[in-house]
Amino acid sequence: MNIDTVKELAEVPVLEKAYDDLVHPSAKSVGKMLSLLPRTVAIWLSSWDRWVVNREESIARTIDAMGSRVDEIPEDHLTEPPAHIAVPAIQQLSYCYDSEDLREMYANLLLSSMDDRVAEYVHPSFVQILKEISPDEAKLLGSMAGLGTDGPISIPLIDLRIVRSNEIVPSEWKTIVSGYNECCLTVCEHPEQSLVYLGNLDRLGILKRFDYYSEADKPAFEAYESSEAIRDVMAKIELEDGKRFDFRRWSYRVTDLGQNFIKICVSQNVKS
Image: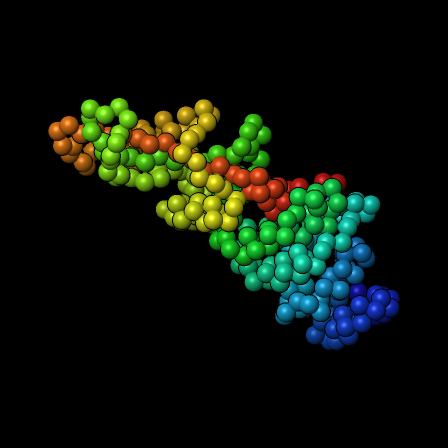
């Protein structure tokens, strides 16, 4: 961004502080990056600059994360996102730059909040949710993008239990394996932490635990119950007389808030 352009932007009263920062030698690289963005977006970023801690680094990384994707939003659909979403999103984006998945989610949130075609789905809680999920949880949510076209997104789980042989409906049991699932396999760096991840997403309102399941989940349950991991556990246990193995099926489902979160922060929702 050349000095004349910076001066032009600085004619807007709220940009006076941003102008002082941009003409400062240490901020010239940010000014150059701003010049690559549509003028409207550059003005917004300059406006928010004065509210963001570690401003130059945060703004620079935001521009880098958003890249040319801003150009995919038609000019007549560009809308200024509210500061209570944009400012903390910019701030937090600079803190999670070592995670590509989280960085992309913050960028998606900012881009969605600038597009009036999807901005209605942006909830203020999304910034806080992003602050409280791990890179692995971001990967897990990424694996859900594009799912749910035929109904709610469901994550099946099973408990392996020992019950009395003479009871069709167990009145008491001993749980051997709790919440076996495969949702994090090949997706997360630490798939053994899947129950922790699912519990946290439940706490944040993205998922909700249910003691029932849909017909569509039955093939997954059957696969889990006959899996090598479960068979290995059963093979190591010598059942007492009058006892048998039993499987309890349950699930997590993506909530309405979770569906919007995935649509805005995970899915590629900006269309040309």
